[in-house]
Length: 115
Length: 112
Image 1 (tube, each protein chain N blue to C red):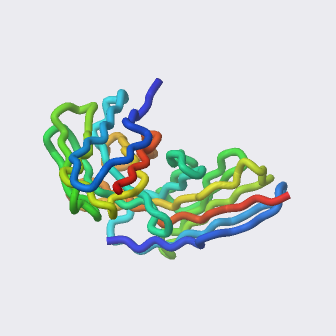
Image 2: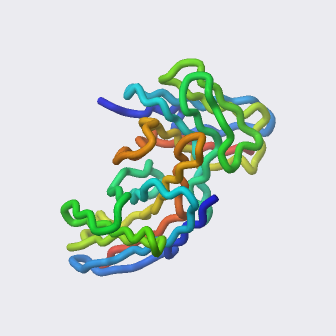
């Protein structure tokens, strides 16, 4: 089954304790992206990657890191989480063609709480 | 950059028709998407428009006018399960690739 798998689904952590949220896709998609979703603010892009070893900042990259060593994986790293990073996070992937009817496939989401 | 506007919430009756509007401003338009999102779940793809006109898909239709920077999602024969947030998303070609930006979503409540 074609899918984007995120782990964990839920995570409660303390301020300053490094954490990684994993994301893996099995569709051979070039493009992968991380979003955070907060009430009233919608989905905001954190980082994205056009292909292996190619990553770039989205609209809200502060406090986050990513890596793209393999095509299928795109982990999101919070080196020193803070309470304002409490949010619902989504990983998404898609083809990277210039145009066409291809939407994003989203993971199930990770609800992160930083206390 | 982009600016995407859609109403925050709407209420409609089961069996009725509802139209959710979306306006946008972008310099490199390359497609408009509608997604449905139930609370706490991932967004799921509903429709895609890149040319002007209406795209129909069962109970859902989406319309686009590029000159007006305007789209709408039309839901017919509303069912209770259609209660969800509907996200308008605009794909913009930025030279370095495509970027998909989401509106804040329209929370639709379907009542009996």
